[in-house]
Structure formats: C-alpha cells, structure tokens
Image (cartoon, rainbow over the protein chains, first blue to last red):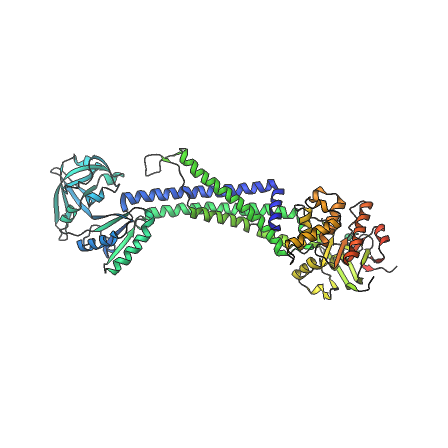
Length: 407
Length: 226
Ligand SMILES: Nc1ncnc2c1ncn2[C@@H]1O[C@H](COP(=O)(O)OP(=O)(O)OP(=O)(O)O)[C@@H](O)[C@H]1O
Ligand SMILES: [Mg+2]
C-alpha cells in the first residue's frame, strides 16, 4: 500500500516524464491492437468468403482419395449408403446447415462447331445454390428440376458462342481410355472471377456427374455449418461417430484446403508480431529510462529508506510498481482507444483501395479479439514492469552511506 | 545514569578508497557507548559520521568489531542489519531526509508499517509521537510545507516510531538556526529521558557540547583524550 502510494506519487511528481512514457505505451498498444484488429477482420472476412464460395467448412472423402492426387478419380468415392450414414450422423447436430455432394469433372465440352477443355464439378443443384461461387450473369444457377441444365463461365460462353439454351456435349475420359458423354444445355452463364476460370468452368448437376462416371456414388461431401465457430466441435463429433460406425473416411477443413490463406495469415501475423516486438523494445527503453532517471534523482531518498531499515525487496517492489502502474494505465488507455477506433470505424466510412484480387474498394474496419487484447495488453504491461527491474535492482543496491552523503 | 554499555566498538578501522588511494577515516578506535546521551565531537573530517554510520549498521568497518545487543554487526548480513536498523535504531540526519511524496504521518509511520502493530495501534502511537514533537496538527502536511525545524522534528518522530533502543543523530542541528537547534536538542534530551533510549549525536556545535556531559572526542579517526 505504502509502496503503491510512493510509486503513484512519484509518477505524479514527475508528471511530464510520466506522461511521455504513458504516451509511448498508449501509442504502442493502440497501434498493435489496431493492426491486430485489422488482420482479424481480414482473416474473418477472407475466411468466410472462402468458406461460402469454395470450401464450405469441411469436406468429407473416402479414405485414400486424397492420396490419389487425382481430383476426378472415382476409385475412392462414397456409396449412397455411406452418404446416408454420414447424413444421419450429422443430422444429430443442429450446427450443421447442409451437406452438399459433389463430383469433380475434367474433360471436353463441344458444340457442333467447336470443342474446348473444361474444368468443373457436378453438384446437388439445391444445395449448390447456397454456395456463392460464380455470379450468374445470364440465366440461373443449376436447375433443381432439370438435371440437363449446366452453368458455364462467361469466357467459355463467349469463345464458343454459347447462349442460354445452347446444346453442349460434355465428354470425360473413362478408365478404359475411352470417353463418356452427356448432352446438356446451357442454363446459366456466370462470372467466376479470374479469367482462367471464366474460360474453363462448367458446373453440372450431380446426376450428370454420376452418369458420366457410371455410378451412384458421390465423390465427396461439403459440409456447411451455421457458423464457423462450431467447426472443431462438429468435426470432432463426426470423427468419433464415423469411427464407431466403421466408416473409412478422411476430412479436410477449409483452412487445410487453402495453403495460400494460411500463408497470408501467417505472414500478416508475423508482421504484426514484429511490430509488437519493436514497440515492446521501445517501451522497454522508455520505461527503463524514465524510472532510471527518477531513481537517480531520488538516490538520497532511497538511501534514507534503506537507512531506516526498509529492505531491498521493498525498494525493488516500490520501483516495480511504478512500471506496473505505468503499464496498467497505459494499457487501459490503449485498449480504450483501440475499442473507440473500432466503434468509430463502424460509424465513419473510411475507404481503402481494393486489394489485388478484388475490384471494389473496401471499407476500413477492425475487429478486436478479446484474446489479442489480453495478449498484447499483458505483454506491454509486463514489459513496462520488467523494464523497471534493472533500475529497481540498482536502487536496491544503493550504497546507503554515499547516498546520504549526497543528501 | 546507568553504566550499562549500549554499543561497544573495538579497534575500529575504516578507510575509503578513492580510486587507488585509500583514505583512512577511522584508525583503531575503541569505545564503550553507555546508556544515555553521548556526543561525538571532533573537527570536520575527523571521522564522526564514519563512526556513527558503522555504529548505526549503515556501514561496515574495514577492521574491528561493533557489538550491539551482544551481536557483532560485522558478522551479520545486509538483510539482518536492515532488520536491526528498522527495529532497534532510529536515525536523524543533518539534511532531515524525509520522503517528499509522503505526508508527515506517512513518513513517521513508514518504519513500523510492517511491524506486528495493528493499524489503530500504529495510529495511536504515531499521533502520540507527533504530539510529543509538537507536530500533532501537521500530520497531513507534506515535508515541502514545513520549516527546517519542523522537518527535523518529523525526522525525530520517525526515528522514535519503532521505539528504538538507540538513536543516532548525525549533526541534527547543523542545518538549523541556533534557536531552532536548541529546541531540537531539548526535544532529544527529553525523549531520551522519557523513552529510555540511548542517543549518540555527532556535532561540532559548541551549544551541543555544553549541554551533554558524556563526550567522545575524536581526532583523525582516533579517540582523543585531551
Ligand atoms: N565515501 C567516502 N569516500 C571517501 N572518503 C570519505 C568518504 N566518507 C568520508 N570520507 C573521508 O573520511 C574522513 C572522515 O569523514 P567523516 O565524514 O566521517 O568526517 P566527519 O567527522 O563526519 O566530518 P564532518 O564534520 O565534516 O561531517 C574524511 O577525510 C572524509 O573526507
Ligand atoms: Mg559528518
């Protein structure tokens, strides 16, 4: 108590130095939290985009499929019974939004005039409609009533002169080295983003995919949850239940499916931590210097305290408390400021230029995670306290006699 | 006055090193401090402060023994000496040495904060001591709001807080005008009698020497018998 009193009052007595040091801590923490909040926003936004567009939350394969490295192979696929069992298991979890069966396709599409290579997949038309992959520019997405309607990329449509209703022969190689074919018609023309996708993408109904492969099986299942936060829970449950049911399956989460996303996030986090590290170092120096100056000025006072029998430990504690108090105050203001900025950015529109892969400018926003706030606040406050250890030790070792001689 | 020995110093040597040179401050000083009031007198530089610092466990002799309560302080570690200072010795310095950020009350209470006394017991004791030194009204003032004489009285109050057996006062009146100095001496004398603490005071102030009968004269770090 007395130590806190002395610490606080000394900080107040040196108000200018204290304020400057506080400023450094506040700026440091606010900056770090701002960046952390921004990265988190990107992480969530980018992640949800990938989930909704491409991957769903996780995908289920027959064991062995991933090892074949042949995206169109049906050698490992899920029988209708297996699919039904999985659906049954997952129906117990209300976090599950829907299950979407798919078969990857790769082959040729042809009209009477022209043929081109295509890359795509067939999927359950109803559930596929919930995926945001591809913006329909003409027609509709996969027709729920007519399995013979397909969706093509707008580049492909243009190159082959395809309009809605045009007939298209889909051919895929079979295991014997021959070709399987189905005649479908163009029900939708979509923009899939990158040009190479627009030039090659074809989506068909799952029935076409099965028929091209002479099977009733699904190649893999996409599982979409109501919210990403349920992922671990549901997946753990599913793995347990699947093992109990004796099914041989493997799973991939959306994160595992996108090495690029992982790398970007790793890079971002690394940069954030680098910046945090720099601030930690600056704070270490600033606090250490402030307290050091203060104890040098207070040498006679510290000598007196030692003379009247105040122990070294108590002296160190008093000095450490100065750092701790600086840290706590600085961190509190910093956290407050960071949340204020978060709220402000919800009200005030600040535009950022579009990132490389997007065309529209994006709105600047940050999303602070409690975890990050605690971690970086703790680090900075800890650093501020730690910074006083050296001055504190020096104070504790003050030579009493010479300190008093200079009183 | 009883003849009981409070502190016994034996063959004390102390030299300070200034770079490569050793400056001798005490050269084989022996003395028995008796209960009561003792003044250590001598010219400036004769070694008064050096002696008091050693007797008060603030410093160690280069050679020799200091027996306080039967223990040789030269054999104690710093933590033990620190505890001894806190519980058995009160200090009064020439420059008052109060903690500027603490009130008169807090300054006085600091040495006994970690004692076994309860908060109310401490309060009672501190207020009584402050009354005693004539600062009852000033408990909540800060050192910067006090005169030199008042500050020295706070220092005395602080020195008394733990009810020490020994009070060490190194030129307590040197920074005060003679009238204030006299009052401080009177106060010390009264307290010494009332509390039964022994007081060792260093001074080259004629006034002080006149008032106190037990004197230790030192010259060049040695007892001087003439
Ligand atoms: N820390 C130190 N380093 C070097 N020399 C010192 C130190 N402290 C004291 N001395 C020297 O030791 C001798 C005795 O000093 P001391 O302070 O004990 O004298 P004093 O009798 O208290 O003098 P004064 O009346 O001026 O206070 C002096 O020559 C002084 O210069
Ligand atoms: Mg002296």
